[in-house]
Every structure is written in C-alpha cells, then in structure tokens.
Image (cartoon, rainbow over all chains, first blue to last red; front, side, top):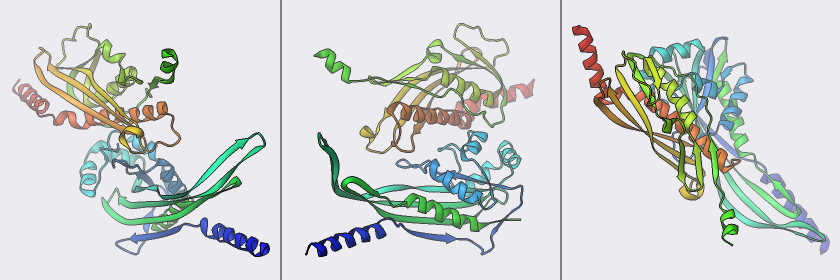
Length: 221
Length: 191
C-alpha cells in the first residue's frame, strides 16, 4: 500500500515537472509578399517599444532580448535609448508616430530625415505588448523555529505574454509586415521543506519565438 | 509615544537626473529672453507631505536645452537682470503643480508623476502675448524592483522629457504666439 502511494506521488510530481515548465506559444504573421526584406551591409534596424498606453508599457528588457536575437543574424540593430535620445523630442511616448500617415508627415521634417539617414536606419520595428500574471491559486507558508524551518504548501500562477511587432520601412514609408506572439504557461512553487520553484519562461519563450520569426523577415546582402 | 508614532512615517526625498539629450529641431529667428526666477531654479515639489522632489536644476537644464531648439538667439536671465536691448519676446516660467500617484493610490502597477508649468509670454514692452499652462506626464514601466524614491525619480525624468517635448512641438502652435510671429514677420517685411 505504502509502495503504491509512493509511486502515485512520484508519478504526480513527475507529471508536474514535465508539464509545468513549458509555455504554449503561438505566432501569427502577416506579410504583403513572401519575399524577405533586403538590407545592405550598411543599413540598420531599430526596435522600439510602445509606451503610450495607460496601464502597461512594453518593457525595455523585452526589447533588448529581441534586439539580441536579431543581432545574431548579422542584422545591425541600433539601441532603443540611443535612437530615442538622438531624435529627441520626436519619439517620446506621447510624440512618437502611431501610424504611417504621421510617420510620413514626420519624415517631411528635414532634421528628422537627415538624422535617420545619418544613422543608416532603414527599418523600424515597433513592439507593443506586455506579460501579465493571471490566475493565482494555492497557498504556501514558511516558518522558522528553534529546531529549524521550512515551507509547506503549493502555489501556482499563470502568465500570458502578448506582443505585436510592426515593421516600417523608413525610406519607402510603408509597412512591411506584422507579427503577433502569444505565449502562456503555468508556474508552480512546491513547499516540501525547501521551496521548489518550477517556473515557466513565458516571456523568454515569447522573446525567442518573436526574435526568430523577425530574423526570417530580413536578408542581409 | 508621539515621537514613536512620528518616526514610523518617513519622508522620501527624490533627486532627478540633470542631463537631457540635445534637441533635434530648427530654431526660428527670434531673440528671446528666458527668465528663470530664483524660486524656479531652486524649486522642490511637494506633491504630498511625505514626498519632496528636487526639480530646480533638472528643469532649468531641460528648458535651457529646449529653448535653444526653439529660438536662434536666447538669453537666460534671472528676475534681477535687465533685458538685453535686442530682446523681442520674454518668457517667464513657474511651477504650477506637481502630483504623484503610487500603485496603492492608482491601483495600477506603475508610479506616475504629473508636472504642470506656467509660461508667461510677453513682448519686449511687457505686453502679455499669452499665458500657457503646459503639462508633463511620466510613469515607470512597472513597480517591480524599484524603491519608491527610485521609481518617482524615473517617472519624474520621463515627465520632464515629456514637458520638454510638449514645449518643442506645441509652442509655435499656440494661436497667440503664431499670430505674434506673423505680425512680426509682416512688420519686418514692411521695413
């Protein structure tokens, strides 16, 4: 009987281990043509986060992560803050163009067009989204006494990452494509004397998938 | 007992970054005197009785940079300095309001800061052109990993940059300023 119970607990923990740490990621892609976007060796890409929404901001950590993924494909990426500072005040959260008509008007400003050309920036990728913790359940409590301490209980929470990427051509002033990534997964914390975290890398999965897909958008000549 | 209770409430003193990026704009050919009063240059905002934000030198640095992007010739003066003879427009700045909202107040996972400035714009003879209230807004990306002081400092920095951007992009859209510039331009053409 005891052996059966042990085997049941063992199998249960094993299932949690195996299923607990994987995120389900979906990518939707839209491109007007199947041809990849061509970049010559001098042209660069800048990746910017949308920060005009009231209740969330696309965090710079995510932008850095996607930039690093794309950089590995020989695509030269300009740092987000470097670009925003170089073109101040045109790309602040409330002044950045939200659509192509506004971008077209903005590029009519000589100083802006010259600065973009000076930096050899050909494409701008807007990232808009966030990672949120949704359902939380269970409880875990920790205690310390003269004889030692420990944590007991079980907690779980769901995380959802949703990010949209839009690619703009700063020379032709057109949209070159859109991507959307949804990633979700459940993380667990098991209190068995020592707390055992089983974390699902939802945001990291979203970054990896989005970065890899964006890499396929570009071909460096 | 009163001393013990008083010690529980701490006051947050916030300092803000004093450097801002150079502005990218084409200045217009106007000679302007910008008056920074001593009160404005040493201003500390107190949005509530537990928070003080040292804004003085940061806002002076920001506006010096922004006004150089708006006008070709700019004089920065304090209220005691007489106006140079070639001054065409005088702008005096003052702080109208500072507000802060923490996650416990706004029920969002962000710290928010609002700044409001008043720009009194006159011609060289002291005739009022306009009185413009200019807002600036900033928030942190989230509330994680920030001390309250650091979070308010970052949100204030964003709000200052926003105020600078608002000034640069909207100043010439103020109808009274636009009208004054058109009159000035037609006067110089007539001469």
